[in-house]
Length: 271
Image (cartoon, rainbow, N blue to C red; front, top):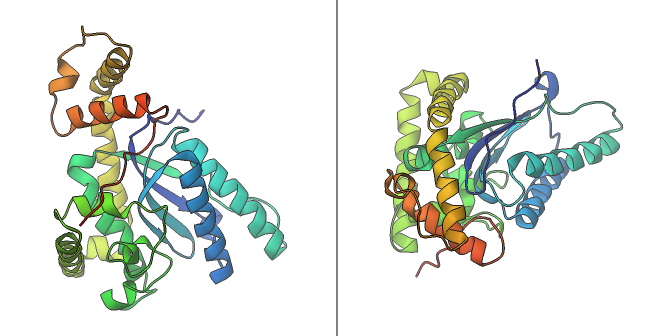
């Protein structure tokens, strides 16, 4: 059966999961990790794909991305193809490195964002690569350390994450850390999450099905953006008055169209 096309428009939030073929490693050492992260950052900048959270493990990687101009499929194809070629050359191997195409689950930002950030960036702790939150604060192969400014990747959108936790950078960083600590305690009391990612995958699949049922509304949203951008005033009211931040996204996309391209919004500068 042919694989269905991805559901993707600029501004769509995706939880992307990359796995090694037959669950084999996709990174063997820090040179591999650095290579993968460098390619992730370069392609994210080139395609204006926002990276909110990420974690690179031995045989898989988790990414929380917002679609830019080219869409998630093209973005990930550039990252994974280039990385696989260089990995095979370095390790003198042949054949596929990744298990089929990456798994991409569309998520509703209003309801899933903070939980996804928490889930993705606690993966090194969950996998036993670090033993504590203080070690995770310094772990270089995960986006967590960027949020409290323990390390810096210019391509990771730290400010968008902090917007969910406070109005000033300091207050938001403190609230973020408290949120992560509470998440660790919650996982320790819930073996479904701590012991396996399958439970989370199931929850995300259910969320994706809800998004699919909402696609007619999403289509109306895109129509409204196009009409407004073309100067029309007879725009349907339904997509303008929907729940959450729909009006905000319309205004954002209109502004991006006027600026000459679609991509993630400008970062907020915290004081």
